Amino acid sequence: MVSIHVLNGPNLNLLGRREPDVYGRFTLADIETRLRARAAALSASMGTTIELTFAQTNIEGELVTLVQNAGLAGAGVILNAGAYTHTSIALRDAISGAQALAIEVHLSNVHAREQFRHHSMIAAVAHGVIAGFGAASYDLALEAIVPLLQERAGTVKGVGNH
Picture: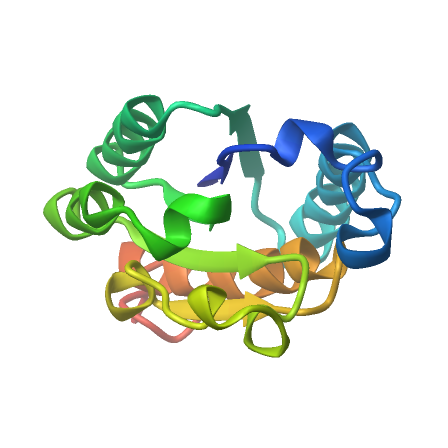
């Protein structure tokens, strides 16, 4: 089984209403539904169970705790930290301290936006960063993180199963 926590930070509860020209018309519930369907398809094709846990909070400390808990449990983290991406040393430390295998996700291309969005506090401790593909950014993160978690657990065919 592969366990993945999809964690969303501030203002992502407003998706679909907040600046749809920037973030799209999908709601966070739409993204969850879409990702659950993608996980079910991946589970079937890979012969493994992918368990998804979703959470959203506007509170930095809560997001830190969610990241810590996921990392300490050995779960992968797909993290859209919203504005905390650019400001939170605490989130960076949570990823690093809990040794969370994390992928940073953004709906918009943050590098094509305001200068203050160009720097991520968490990118250096994330396994990768996916930005600019709208709701599909989450799909891409899911596709990327599953084999990484399997490799980490030694359950990929040909890796640790000789």
